[in-house]
Each structure stands twice: as structure tokens, then as C-alpha cells.
Image (cartoon, rainbow, N blue to C red; front, side, top):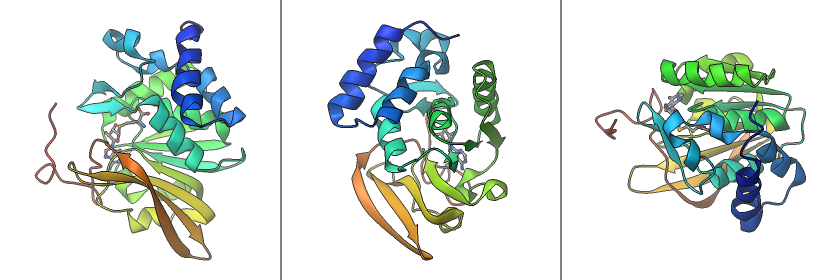
Amino acid sequence: MGEEYEEERTKMVVDQIMGRGLRDGRLLKAFMAVPRHLFVPAGMVEFAYYDEPLPIGCGQTISQPYIVALMTSLLNLAGDETVLEIGTGSGYQAAILAQLVRRVHTVEYYAPLAEQAERILGELEYPNIAVHVGDGSQGWPPGSPYAGIVITAAAPEAPPCVLNQLAEGGRLVVPVGSRQYQELQIWERKWDKFSFESVLPVSFVPLRGKFGWSEEQWPQIR
Ligand code: SAH
């Protein structure tokens, strides 16, 4: 399944990911292995390997390939980790992470998106991904501690309870900000101290839930 579009996929990896300086062999192999066109709605398949995010329903998007690659590479994954993704969306980022670690937990706020992601991830037979429906702004305590956490929606701040689910030496990647301005932050836990660096300006859909943005603060067009 998903053998088609190999030429488009190779071009995506070479131009968008390698071309912007991400050269890690394991990372590139993961992007070659996952059939991105199966994670977009039927009418969007021809755009699946474009250098942009795409709508996936419920007012949500599948992130641009380079941003998925950058967020993944910032986690410095070695291969034996348990990681958490907050914002399953299409399931694409979870599929990429599953190539690179031992176990992936991913949480989605909107049940229809979680169900669709779970269906495609099941068809592709990735055995090491667990999809959960819930408020990921509070993390996913049952799977913690995590060596890496990636939040794929814009948060008002790095949620402290999510930071607390990091293992010693663990890393959190999170876009922080409002609709007007967001920056991608990389956090690290060292001896129970948390520090972060800003990586680059980005644009994500809002994180909902207890530690996210309310509909009043940041309404969304569906
Ligand atoms: N990683 C996704 C990108 C999805 S966009 C992909 O590869 O396709 C961000 C996702 O975060 C959306 O699906 C949105 O519904 C979800 N989201 C927003 N707030 C959330 C919350 N509090 N908990 C879990 N998921 C949330």
C-alpha cells in the first residue's frame, strides 16, 4: 500500500527537506517511507507533496512537510524512545515519528479526526502508535515520561503540566503564540530545570482545551 507517488516523495525530500539543511539519514528515510498522499483528503491527493500545509477537515491542517521534518529533528531521536504528539490531525506526523522511535502516543481533540487517523495508521500497519481522543493541552499522563513531546498546534505558552511529563533530558517542541505571531520553541529538561530556545516564526492552528485558546479568544473558520 502507498507505493505510488515515489517520484513526488523523493522530490519533496530532496528539495524541501535536504535542500533546507536537514540531512540526517534516519529522518530522510522516514519521509521516504511514509506515503503522505494517504493522509490528505481525496480531493487533495495531487497536492500532497507540495511545499505547504493542506486542509484536512474540522478546520484543521496537515503541516507542511519541512515543518514536520524540522520539529521531528529538534527532538534528537535515537530510536528507543517513547514520544508524545499533541494534535494528531491527519496522523502524518505520528507516522513519521513511528519510523524513528519505539512507541508513539498521539492525542487528538476532535474525535472524527482521531478516527480517520487511526484508520489510515491501522491500514498501513504501524504497530507502535496509540491514538487517543482527549485534551492534549494537558498532555497524556498514562504514557509518561516522554523523551520527546511535539505539540502541533499554537499554545499560549508551553503548558507546565506537559513539560512535567518530560523524562530527564527530554525535549518539547511547541509553537507558542497567538494568531498574530507564533514562534517555534524547543524546550529541554535538565535536572528538573526547564530552558528553551526560539527556533523560527511559524503559523499553526490554535491549541484548544484547558491550556489552549478558547473559541472566543481565537475563533476558527470551518
Ligand atoms: N500533526 C498533524 C497536524 C495537525 S494540526 C498532522 O501531521 O497532520 C493540529 C491538530 O491539533 C488539529 O488536528 C487539532 O484538532 C489538534 N488539537 C487542537 N487542540 C488540541 C488539544 N487540546 N488536544 C489535542 N489535539 C488538539
